[in-house]
Amino acid sequence: MTENILVTGGTGALGRHVVDRLGAAGHPARVLSRTRGSHIGNLGTGEGLTAALDGVGTVVHLASDPRDPSVDVEGTRRLVAAASPGTHLLYISIVGVEGHPYSYYRRKYEAERVVEESGLPYTVLRTTQFHNLVLFALETLAKAPVMPVPGGTRLQPVEVEEVAERLVELALGAPAGRVPDMGGPEIVSVAGLARTYLRVTGRRRPVVSLPLPGRVAAAFRGDAHLAPDHPDGRGTFADFVSATSGRSGYGSKAPGR
Image 1 (cartoon, rainbow, N blue to C red):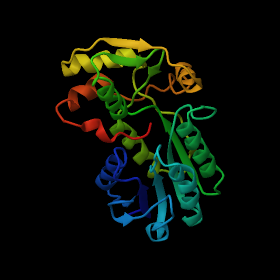
Image 2 (image 1 turned 135 degrees about the horizontal axis):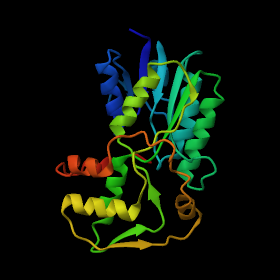
Image 3 (image 1 turned 120 degrees about the vertical axis):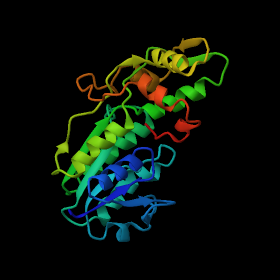
Image 4 (image 1 turned 180 degrees about the vertical axis):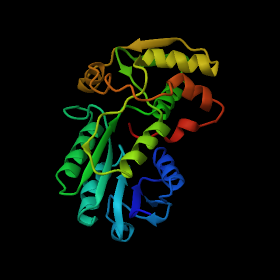
């Protein structure tokens, strides 16, 4: 048995799979969560971190909240300050966050810098958007009689369970710094993803691509969030929708990606 592993955000869409896979591999993990899990704690305030990190040799840092700026950057600083010297800190980030005008992406990049400058041995994995986030967005857009989507924007969605598989490999390995990005198997326009969603779920809506103004929309049209050289994922978005379309509200708790 290796040293204890702590997973922050271990009850989330990604965290649940990471915790399950670690357990299946013989490495049961502690779970840090604000509401449930083996250790109740709050990265925004620092509450519970000392107890959760006691005896921990590896931290898989997944906790994130696009609605709460205190979690990603200040929370990562608190986590670093509370961790013992030599703790392996594994951080999940997003492809293309450097120089991106989207405020949440800027915070993710700043958190990356906190990890890199922490003095702790670390690993950073960037991925593209998760399938369930894309599904959540499309479910929301499909509530209107006409389905509006951002024109000129492409995505490379990846299966969250495959990301969990990669994270477990990294958590059980040696610190590796910034590792290669991980993307889904296909790069598809948002309009194309919308049509896939409608086809697989048997719904009918006109899909209308709209040119969105502003720097954030322009950045997404520029494809910086894609990883064309790393189509590592196996499951496609159509596969995901087919497997989950019978589960009501599956995408209702999408991560901030």
